[in-house]
Image (cartoon, rainbow, N blue to C red; front, side):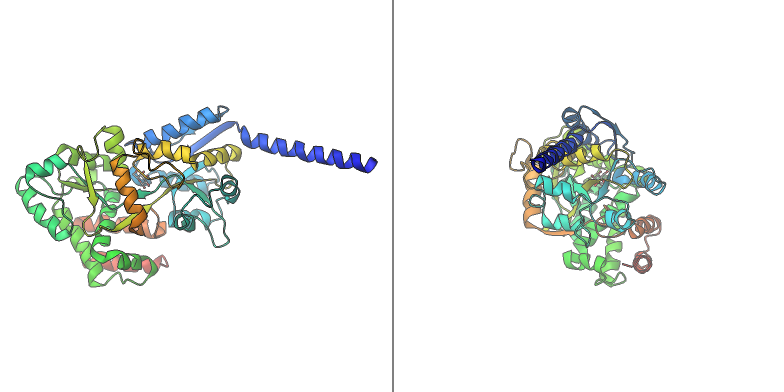
Length: 422
Ligand code: GAL
């Protein structure tokens, strides 16, 4: 009898503990600081939509939106580095899947594994394996939750303006340079280009088009030589495209450059599909009418991807709230809320991508390509190379923008690849 009682007490105690555990997880409270670079251009609206729904689900958590302005995180990443290495991490932060996550934060042991959240939500079956591979270490620890899939190699245009100028969408760089002659003669730059990081972004699309998927991938696994004539020609092509572009490129944000295309002040812009978010959410344009899109020249059939994710850094002040946030943002519900505003595809495959009232013609087209094309990874957005390489590569592009020395740029990139152990 006494024995029975003891067992009963033990069982009750275990249940009570379990209940406390569940309670603590179910009703987090306190502040949750969310760090990102989403401060405008459809991105802020997408984040705000997530925060609004999260706040309904978790009314006791007060969210601090600690976004730092600057496209592609140019400023946010510097602030994040200071905070992470100074022992003052935000509760959760935006980071790209791939090397931006792995080569720095995971390598430094500053991220907490999230396998429990994946298992509890059945996400191991709901996220594409290729994406999971980008955020998992050799021991099988998964470190972040992806909120989207973005495409980098997209060329945007204004259909009515192209008709007015009598030009069609170029599918090769040679065709682009023919278009350039026509539009430049009419006083219109053929390409709208923005500040330095957007020039790196442009280069990666050019490199993919000039080299093809296999040789482009070879840049990141060492099988393509940076000093080969083909790679030198990627820089030459970039130089020629810059000659077809607006001269004030260094002072334009990505939104400014995209806006020039809408306004008819430039024919094309190569930018990730956050530009779709900008056109749809900020400018309320109709896809196919107010803006058109195509794979950047020479890249049809290839989808250059990147993914925005959030994780739980070691030392986060409010891990229970972060776990609630991550459990939410990885869900199909959250991804269907966020991505139609943001311009990206949901990463969770149980999201409702086939609902055309949520995901318009742009998304349907992108989804067809995502599920049928050859997939490669973005340099400008952290996937294929460690920040030690990509940050210095941005400096090399800045130099190239002024001197147009293609052989010099290729040689410096080769040196960088050696120095950063790629
Ligand atoms: C990328 C990011 C996108 C978007 C873009 C422009 O790096 O992945 O979500 O924020 O920068 O800011």
